[in-house]
Image (cartoon, rainbow, N blue to C red; front, side, top):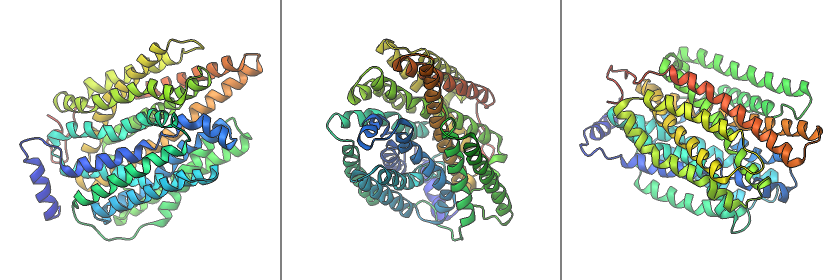
Amino acid sequence: MTAPLQEFEDEVVEDPTGRTPLVIKLLVAATFVVILNETIMINAIPRLMADFDIDERSAQWLSTVFMLTMAAVIPLTGWFLQRVPTRTAYTVAMATFCVGTALAAVAPSFEVLLGARVVQAGGTAVMMPLLMTTLMTVVAESDRGRVMGQVTLAISVAPALGPAVSGVILELGSWRLIFAFVLPVAALVAVFGLRQLENVGEAQVSSVSWLSVVLAAGGFSTLVYGLSEIGNGSTGTVTAFIVVGAVLVVAFAAYQLKLQRSDAPLLDLRTLKHRTYTVSLLLMSAAFMAFLGSMILLPLYLQNIRDLTELQTGLLVMPGGLAMGLLGPQVGKLYDRFGSRPLVIPGSIGMVVALGVLSRVDLDTPYALILGFHVLLMACLAAIFTPVFTMGLGDLPMNLYSHGSSLLGTLQQVAGAIGTALLIVVLQNRSEDLAAGGSSPAEAFVGGLQWAFVVGAVIGVVVIVLALMLPSRVESPEGAPVGH
């Protein structure tokens, strides 16, 4: 550990007030702004379908391409964050995000808008690993649950609030106002953060494996594209995309194992030798499949079937996002005191119950019921995310923090993209089958929606199984239990 980093860490550990370091507060604010955009377009899908004359599957790519880009770029961040100062990483991330946001606001076509979302996601991809790596470096082990609870606001609540924020903005006018609103906020956060931010640690110098970058980007994007096209193209073509994507991902992993012999991998897979980290990785991936996949379903149902406006839809789903935000810090404190199992296991069960109830919605389900179980879903996810993030990264030695957060972020985004694509495919295919059997368009849509939520609940069962495999606490590499 470098001397400046040791001094900074000692200062934080010995702070008797238990205050969150300023560097973490600044990174949380910036990360919240950029991750908010991961789901901010969900509520605008019906309007975009009309403005650009595209179908539902095409429109949902505005969210999917964001996640795919993050999945392609995040593997690079493990290497990037070790080799540039904190301020440089922050500047690159926020400048890239602002450029993409400005381009989206003036996009003349759907293709340009998609490209702008790619640029936005490129900046966002750096922020989350930067925040997680810095937190694990400068926050004392005994305080990580509380601080990670605050970080949950950025990582989990921002996507949950995206549809609500866009619903309010869309009530004022065009979908372009979403980006016109986000741009100045992002610019102000970037400037203020740069004025206050201090570098943490010292940069290292080494080359990057561009073959690894190509394999990761091509593999993850091809795989998810193939999965999203199931039921929407020839079986042979779809299978080819899935197989090619899977082969490239396997080749990427094999190449990283080879590079580890020279201690220069793009993404160090030695993180997977740590059992609790690996279980946490799988659990977070499954949870995000159900979380982001389910998030796109309610706005479609509320606007297409129940004829709610974007604002009304946003207001209905907003309490769930707020519940997650308010519970995050409290969950973190409970984790520090009691460990993970009393939180993650009940949270996983509650998640499945909530998705199971939502799978029974019909043409006239009371809004109060939808609201109540959406809040329950978000509350249960808060009980899952904070402990699992903290335990997973806490199981790693310091030299693997950046790689561990990068791998976690990569699979989280890929899982979210797969979950979104999977549930939309189930929705559309089931709806088409019911329509062909004589059901009305509304009945067919609701039938497809019910099946999609059932798939989400099945994914939630996987989360329960993985939660049962987690210990209540982990031993740090130095041998002290994390959280007490």
